Every structure is written in C-alpha cells, then in structure tokens.
Length: 361
Image (cartoon, rainbow, N blue to C red; front, side, top):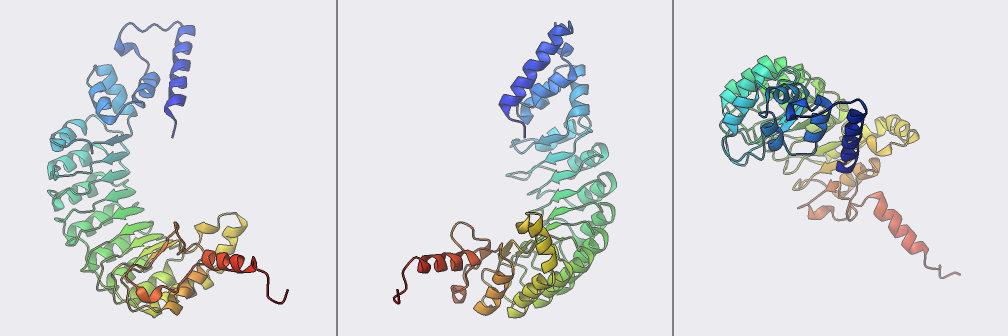
C-alpha cells in the first residue's frame, strides 16, 4: 500500500507538472481525473461519496475510477445508501457491507447485481434480513465473484446456495460460517461440482453437514488450502482422510469441537505429508518452506486423540508449532496432549542441555 507521505509527494509532482504545462485550475471541476483520484486516496470512503456529488465531472470520474468501497461505517440507512450508489459506482471490484445490526435488504443486493458486474469481492456478513432472492440476484449479475463473505446470514436455504455456485464458478474464498440452513451436504456437493478453483472455505458451526458433504468438497476442490470445520459435530475420520488424500495443498484445517475425530484422522494427515514430501523439498529449494504442508491445525476439544498420533502430525509438518507465541497447533481442552511438542521446543531443550558439561569431563 502506498503511504500517505508518498501520495502527498505524488500530488506535489502533479501540481508542478500542471504548472509547467500551463494548466490552470479555476474551479473544482477543472481538476484532472488522475489528480482527483490521488486526492481521494487520502480520505475515507464517506468523503469519496460526498465528493461524487460535487459536480457531474467528479461524479463521472469517480464512477469510472473507483474500484473499492466500504460502507461498514454506516450505522443507519445502509440499504438506502446502496440503492443510490450502486447505479453510480459501476466499476466496483470490492464492496464491503459488513453490519453491526441488520440493515441490508434484498432490493439493495439486487441493485448491486444489476449494476456492478465487475464485482469480485463482496462482504455481506451479518445481513440477517437477506433471503434467497439475494443469492439468486448475485448468481445472475455477479458471475465474476472470487471472494464472498456470507457469515452470519442465517436465512439462506441450501437450494439458493447451490444455485449461486452454478453461476459463480470463479469463487476462491467463501465464508459460510454460521449459515446453518444454507450449508447442507447437498450444498457442499454443489460447491464441489461447480467451484473447483476454491481455495478457502469457512463452514464453522454448520452442524448439519456430514462426511458425505466434506468428501464431495475434497474430491471437487483439489486446490483447497484453508478449511474451517469447527463445530461440525457430525463429521468423522472419513472427512479428514478424504481431505488428506485429495487436497494436497491444504495449509490450514480447523477441527475444533469435532469430537468424533480419532487417531486415524491424524495418521492420515501425517501419511499425506510423507507422500507429498517432494513438494516440500521443492519449496525448501526455493526458500519457501512454510508454503508447503500444514501450517495451522486446530484440534481443540478433540478428546479422543492420543499424543503419539498428534506428535506424528507435528513431526511431519515442521510449520506446526506448539511453542510460545507461535501456536499454530491448537490443542485447548486436550489435557492428555500436553506431551506433544514441536521441533522448536525439542531443539531448544537439546541446546540447553548441551550447554552443561558432561560429568565425564
């Protein structure tokens, strides 16, 4: 990101260039588009919206140049604001509409889908008033979406979510945390069939899904790198085995409160790491060791696991850490796993003991 100081220097250069070229600014509308957008990059989104109403020249310039907008600051009347802005800001690629209290309604999402066809990143989290109609609108008008946050949207059905995936096939990041009604095995099967570019998926507390749904994901989304299954209480080792065998690029896996998980799941993860060792060594040669293999694993409250199985995973993936400040292997509530340690702790222990002279000396 360009710093404020660098932007100010660039503005000064623009002014100097204008002086040299004999460009005079007598009114606000005379400011060149490039300079206008530089100025607006220094202010917040609320000011950008105000600026778009200064004159028709500014409105047209901002409409064609603005690619990112956040309205999360809007505590009231967000729905009306979206209805008025969507027809103007047709080049938006990122739109953040996160809410503290439900404001958005289906007609606002319909307006976005009607006018913002270049949208790639949309955050609708906590939009409790939205219904299936919003997902149908997005499916028709926003087919370029690569990132979609629907966390906390509790009124969507699994049929509407499945319909969305048939048209939004470029999705790479999808957050469905808490979408209990929308996330079913059928919905996951649709995601697996239609969204094979998916890399990150949050299914936290979607308690209705089973191994069938997760296995559909594993087979249909081989590039999956981050998967959160926390609170998905019905899944068993079968889900983890499928992920270990099919999703060789998996970097982060959340299994918090998945109490049916046993040692078999852990050993399958460890074995997948051994089978993919050549990928890890290839990354090591490129100086990108941490980019291969599991880097984050949450098995908190998985009380059936034993130390030997978890230690096998930890030994296979050196990027998993139990040491202070780097907890990427999270085992809260598993008191029987206190003996599991990462390579850092073992190395520190060896270094500490080697600093003392052997009695024989």
